[in-house]
Length: 79
Image 1: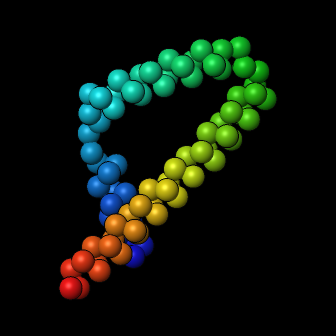
Image 2: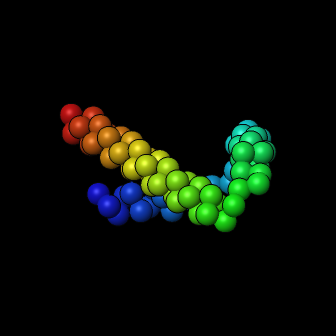
């Protein structure tokens, strides 16, 4: 199972970003720049720590979606 997760993550990392994704990323970066303007060094550390934890949760959701999809496909193709 974990080999499949690694393979899918690897494939996703190699995918080029679409124009729509780039536009969304630009929006996020602009909003983030406005939000963090004037942050102290300590606030930056707190913000990065928060961002890392949000990224971990996002990865967990992606992994869960992959596992559910894999299990569903396995059931469908066993019939």
